[in-house]
Length: 129
Image (cartoon, rainbow, N blue to C red; front, side, top):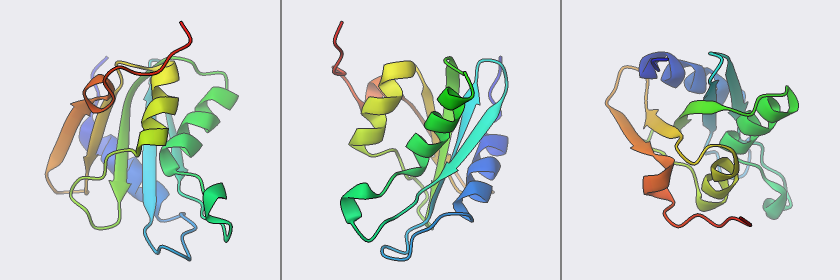
């Protein structure tokens, strides 16, 4: 299955518009592509108790998992006005639980696209195996 990065970036940008970020004002959107060609989106949701904030990447993943999905191909992330916004360390670890070979795509609609694999971004992933 081929991943269309422009479509995933567009879906992530749409999700970013729904973000709740009154404290940082840094909105992030994510779009997660499954092996079955379904796309699940998420946005960051902040909280006055900052440690309870959740990232867009985990929202997308948790929605997909809650829908019964377990195989993922690619994740697009769009953050603020940055040309590249890769997942934080916590998101990398959570994503690695399900898809250590996940392709990570970031950029802005119509701009340059940056692509890496999760294994590159999080070598020596923690696992209980």
